[in-house]
Structures are given as C-alpha cells and as structure tokens.
Image (cartoon, rainbow, N blue to C red; front, side):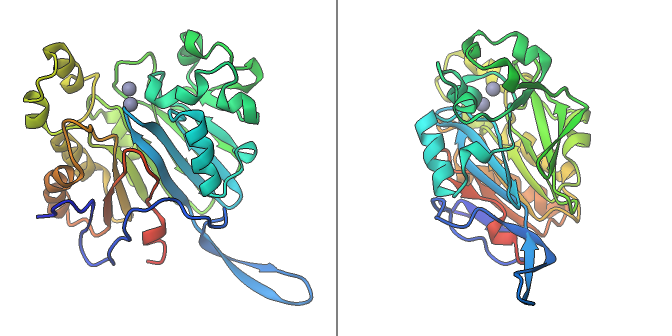
Length: 315
Ligand SMILES: [Zn+2]
Ligand SMILES: [Zn+2]
C-alpha cells in the first residue's frame, strides 16, 4: 500500500525525491555530455538534460507543463491564471520573453486560461502559440491574441521550437481538434504530454509510444466517479469516449506505451473529487509491474510544481 505518498519506484532505480516547489535553479537542465571551453584553455564538461516540469495539473487549478533543453523552454498549455504562471516561471528561472512557444492541446479553460485576457500571456511576452487551424477558427474567448503569434500545428505534423522538435497527434476529447504532443531534444530524448483523453486510440499509441518520459492523464477512479453524486450527464461525459481516462484505462494504456527506453512517468490531470494520488498509484502500479517497468512513477500535484526529470537524471 502506498498510503498518501504520491510517488512510487518500480524496479531497481533509486527513489524519487519528494514533490516540491520549483526552487531557484539555473534555467539550464542538462542531459547529454558535451565539451565546451571557458577560454584561457580551460575545458569544461557540460551535460545536457531534458527538463520536464508540471507547473499545475487539474481542471480546478489549470494545466501548464514546462519542457526545456539548454536555453530552449516551451509550455504545453497555459491554463493557469497569468499571475500564477508568471510566478511559476520566475521560480523556475525561466524568462517568459524567452519561451520558444506555447503548445495548446485544446480550448477548455483549464488549458488556455492565461490566454483569455485582454492582454493574453503570449501577447504580453511575444511568444508564438501553436494549435490546430480549427482551434484558432473557433475561439472567441481568445480573440485578443495578435494574428502574428497564432501559429497552426495540425495533427500528424511537427515544428521546430528552438532546439526542441514538437510533433502533434490527434486525441479523443470533447473539443474541436484536441492534440497530444511529443517533444524531442537534439539527442533524441523525448517526452509525450497527453491529458484530457476519452479513449486510448491508435494515434495516441503511435504518437506517444517509446518515449523517455510520459506525462499521462489518470483522471478518475471509476467507482469514485460513479458514486460521486455528480449529475449523471457529467458522469457520462467524464467516463465517455470524449471525456477523460480512468485510472484503469490509463494503466492499460501505459502498459502499451512504455518500452525499455522509458525512464519516468508522471500521472496527470487527476480529479480532485473522484481520485487521489494514492488511488491512482494503487491502480496503475500492477499494470506496470506486469510489463516489468523499471522506471520512476510519480503524480503531478494539482496546484504546485512537480518535477519529472530531475530525480531520474543521473541514471
Ligand atoms: Zn483539462
Ligand atoms: Zn478538456
């Protein structure tokens, strides 16, 4: 039993650190060894590392995920109130002006809240935003976004944002053209970010299989949802194929997505009412044990920053 602890380690890898607020650390995270010179004949060894941090992950507090490599940083979704987003980025030592892009999965408020303003977050900091053409065509709530920052990225295609390649794939959710993203660093290290998923489809499988890291939705416990006392229409929506994945569905999906390459999984977008970190871990761990997954498994905090990569960086 995992009690209230929100992390578990499968296999032989070392334990994860505890969840914490983002500290003031240098913005560069390193995963690949390269050699550089400081001049004066002094040679230094710099190790490049993909950086993956959830800044917030829930329908109540919003969703924003930070992925970085060297001096490149991008956001997947910006559904956190703008002041909170600015504070989270400041604590991560990331200058919002220097973001290489914001990749928006779909138009629900918990994924675009900081864009639904007279001066949207991306406009304030001159950051391009990528989403599907249908997303841009159907969004009156973000009409104040300047045209020059609205970039189109369709499912099945990819774009280079700084040193990160970002590929989009289609997913099933009750939005106009919802997208999942796979971000790949120059050394091939990759992370997929997939939340708000009604069912696990072949496109999600091919889009997010065999990644080094996964941020993956584990929204609700089926029994808790069914007994929640919520209106039946809402329960049907959440559990339907355009809603959200249950813990069991997430476990089954992860068992298909994980390969020997996978080092870390973060369960995301947990329902505050119909799930808990311990319940999600209890349900998903057996699925991952069955495929002898050896990596780390953690749960994104609903409202605070949670690191995926720092605790597994030195394997
Ligand atoms: Zn959502
Ligand atoms: Zn949604």
